[in-house]
Length: 236
Image (cartoon, rainbow, N blue to C red; front, side):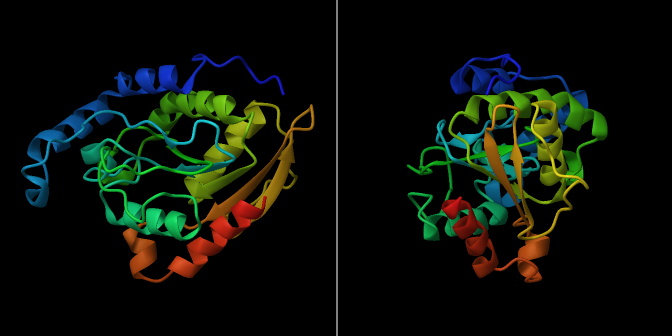
């Protein structure tokens, strides 16, 4: 496949650009304010307080797409889905599925590794109330597009955590020349579709409920349900 030429030609260069980004004033102010005021339970922690890069294998076959860093999770630790209950739930499932070295992800220095898997978010800064604006989503979208382009040579399946990740991913794939089924696939837990590029690069997309507290505490998403998603991804 010959997608649009990436702005950054390597994951390392892209990560450096992401960390330095200050394009969204509201998000910059919020992430830095949270890093200064801190949550009482993390009063002695040094918060990351910057945009958060993807994490995992730069030659991954499974790509997990989330929404945005948590204010006291990734915005504190500097690693996506690390340091909060959503991350605990996700990494435990990845470990059970043979995709992670450790069952927990606590900090950037904990030795965690992902096997054939990478996690990224559509928005790279923690937003107030976990709700980025449409403009903030659009401003951050090129980072997602660039990362997907760099991962395409080895990518086989994308797992979209939640409806926003699902719709954002579809938009990115369309912009890169992939043929999306008509009517446009609707998000749902376990929803799947396969998309092909003009040169027959085939990608499978799987939807999953997001491992947020709202979903896990209410049992809308259970450990067996998420494990089932990664079992599907492993077979792709």
